[in-house]
Image 1 (spheres, rainbow, N blue to C red):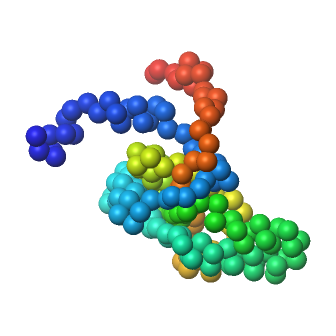
Image 2: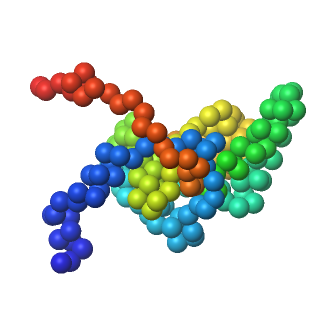
Image 3: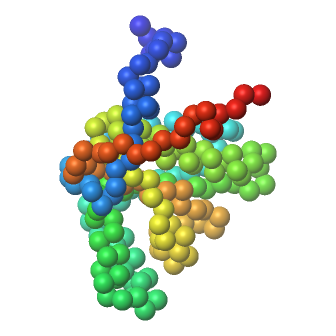
Length: 195
């Protein structure tokens, strides 16, 4: 069977993953995280998101190893400059150390394009979801966060974001310390209507 033929066949394992996937708290992650080849695979899966116009209106920043510590120093410096308490500064210094890997998904939607900005931003959101699904498929747990630093102008500048770019999410990926508990899900009859 060729790769092309696989698109015409059911994928029950994929449905099982979609129906059972859930996020795990970044605070409850531990090593190991994905290997270099697994990170590359996760990023390739992320880049397979729907993308009207083939614009690739997103990019990735990978925080691993010492890069997590360097980013923590940026966060701590911003907090110190704003006069935050020492306890808060130290918490920010270790923020990205909660997980072995953090992937920043940067939305780089193009204004003045026939593809609406909203659709381009939705594509960046789909990238985040693909990354979570890929991490889960490889046996890891993920957590899609933004938190304050995704929006802070000084942090965005130090991350190298260009004008108009925004953080779609920081995806924390690692191994769950404890078994994940199911969370409440919507009652489908309350959120589905038929036209």
